[in-house]
Image (cartoon, rainbow, N blue to C red; front, side):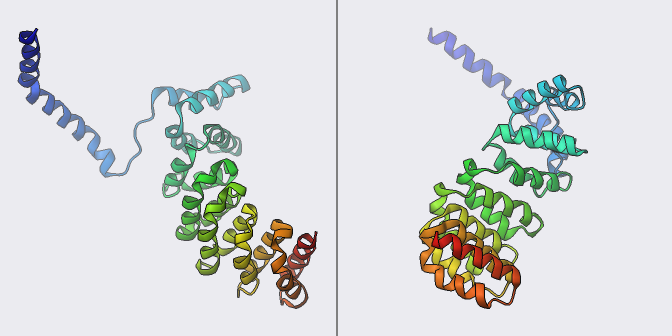
Length: 260
């Protein structure tokens, strides 16, 4: 028994140089693509499914099933081939059915020169409160990636919900300190979460220098409703005195919602 075991070990040792050479050659074969940042080759089943997306309805449905089964790695080739609105809608359906595993992949693809814009469009479309666990990543994207801010901001707002209360401090900080173009998304996300803990930050934002931030804060307070009663004086003041008509309207509607 021991003799056989040692024979196996000696066989492996004898072949170690050959195995090492094979591994090195494989690495060299992949090196150009890795160094140039090129995507990995598309698996045959994914390539076949991509062709099926251009076929008859039954063929398209079968293709989408295959792509969903392939999972998040299929998203880049799907987006790369989405040259029409119909194909982009198909990409959104695939991403939606993949679900939460699609989010990190879409976020990573935002910086891809070939598909970044499409990845952002799909991310904004498919985001739901089921993605609440990704609020930190979506908020970071909204704050730190100006080229993807609109898409990430929309995804952030759509992912926010009552289960996102742990994100309130970060959202409140973003509302107070973030880029003016990012702050409206933070305000609206706070409204979607609906936590009373977000009310002070939203009430303070009614005095923000940027009108879109003030309007978003008012809208968010109206969304929170009666739990935002402490902000009612600030809403009434904004409804009566704000220099921007859109803010006045938003504050008036919010005040009515807060009063119930």
